[in-house]
Length: 480
Image 1: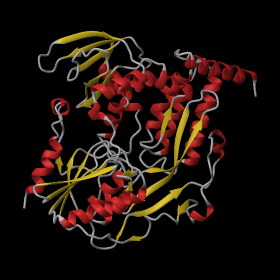
Image 2: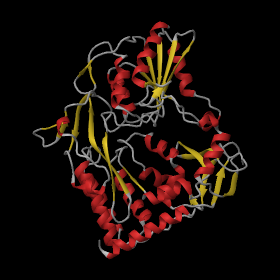
Image 3: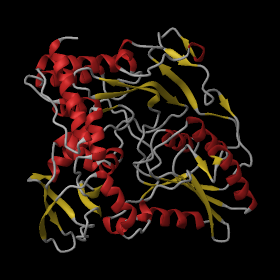
Image 4: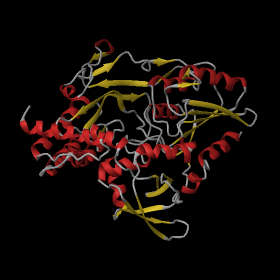
């Protein structure tokens, strides 16, 4: 090991010790040569392993982004400085499963010792509103619009976050959703904005400007306040639920994630039970709510669709890998070759999956539901969820309500995924290996599923739990 890299490693060890002592870690600065080496490894890893690398961004355009990033690495930087240059390049791939993450030392510090931004926010129409506050004593900030943080205009902050957030294709909703979900950590990772926070707000009701200084809060303390103050935000233990409205005429199936269990029963078995109940109640309309469902196991999306179609159907057209194993695996722990008996190398030089249960002709499931179907979706409907929605849309089997979904209409790149740790900065690069091609056509190029009835919640709706999208769905379900 060269001496300069050994010195960097010693400093990273010292950062781990700082976390153990409750301090914010100090990252060492590295010479441009080491930074460029990490950038080249990141580029090589993506070019080797990511089988959908140029699905949305042509190679010349992505090459220019990498070359431009290399030119910026002309002076010593620490790992987060480097991440801030790499992140927008990786986001240019337009793949929601491909991302950069800070070194583990920073991840652990964010979870334990670094005082975080003490507010939750939502991005609505290019504005950022407060939805939750985690201050020891409430300041009644929800509903206020953030205008500046530590002297930096929110337009600049939001622009950086949106440019650096990964998301499939050109969905208009996925990046604002991801920024809303990760605003506090993005402030630190992508912009270096730290506690204390000097904020400028605008009250949308009065137009009045409000300034306030707030201290950050460590994540363990934030969790305690959240559990007491916002118990309704707790993640549901069950991955799905079913309820009936209007004497059973309307069934509402909510799927929080395509994984896990419902009342200790596997989700696949729960779907069987749910559709039996829907049949027994003779429901004429079914609302399927997959808002903020980030995906899960591939076959469960297909299983849900199978109850809604009455003829055999195709779900996947193809699943493709660049290869079975790659040189960049040396930078990843536990990276394993794709099993040889699951793929077939074809004339295009690619490896095609031959074992996935969603390939080939699929059969409908019983009991079949032949009534009206209404799908509720938003920018958090991604991955497996978007596969379900795309095939549902292509088969013209539902009315779609809410906002544009978060995933690409024709598929994504996900499946087996490798997390490579760049050797100098320790920044981590997430590289999915399998590209999915759905058995659909006639979608909008480079976009996701668009709603038949677009329904956007206001900040007032969000704070009062006024579910305007569900209300619209219920009205549609009651129509003959």
